[in-house]
View 1 (cartoon, rainbow, N blue to C red):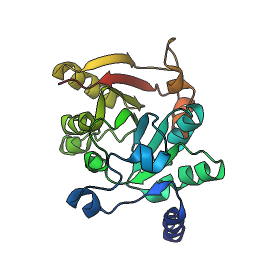
View 2: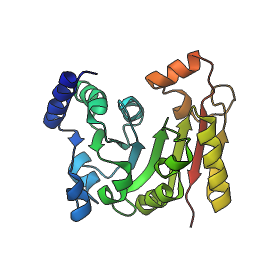
View 3: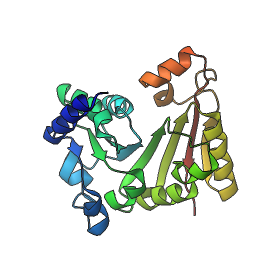
Length: 225
């Protein structure tokens, strides 16, 4: 994407009513005004809040919002020029139950309050295979602790990935730490009984992976402790 195009998207994001772009110091330095208030201030209802972390173009968040109008969805990503697409689609198609937050995922516990989130989706994250990149892996212990601090006690996390490494790493970590694995499948499109929201919604990249016969894996779990 050219820098001109990026700038245009950044400018347009600023006009979208469903996009929130707090500065880092707003989140870290003070109590962010939406922390604990997403339902009342943004969605104007008491419905469950579901986050998609590293939402990319936002297509999964938008599709989930269309499928489940009784829930509120927030796509989180640091790359605003990417989720511009999802935000624009949501406005054009009048989908009121999806919003986008531009921030780093390591600041997630500054953007949401304790018990504010009902569910988290992590879709096709970078597996960060190199050892020195472990700290950026979205299912490492530090990230799980952040998620736990904002999730309700019965809240769940969903990991959908084409990376067998990420799938295996996460399963191993969950079992080792005594977290509760509710469902695990290393090829959701080939095995019966996969949750419908996992197989009925596909991202652009996911459809490409499927064309290459790459298995798509899925884990649903609860963070204990």
